[in-house]
Image 1 (cartoon, rainbow, N blue to C red):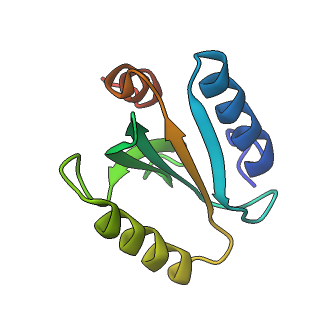
Image 2: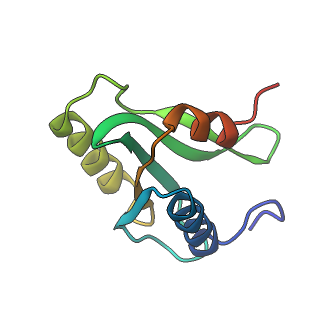
Length: 114
């Protein structure tokens, strides 16, 4: 395991607490491997899909969040199909659903720029 990466279950708990602290909703749609599981976030605002983020290993060896999957105009079935495909591809993956008031701000704070 990389020194730069927390175990998946700790990062999941941290994300859930952060979303709930800002009066948002967070739910685990799929529980993955507690230590090594990949993380995929399905982000919505007031029930409308906004974006999906996945934690990926960069070429430098550190982990970062990257936009993946359907965009903000995607319907519920398209999002559900994408999540089902990802689950079949990686059985150890965690999938979290986050419904937050300011998804743009959350993503800007989550994905470093520069």
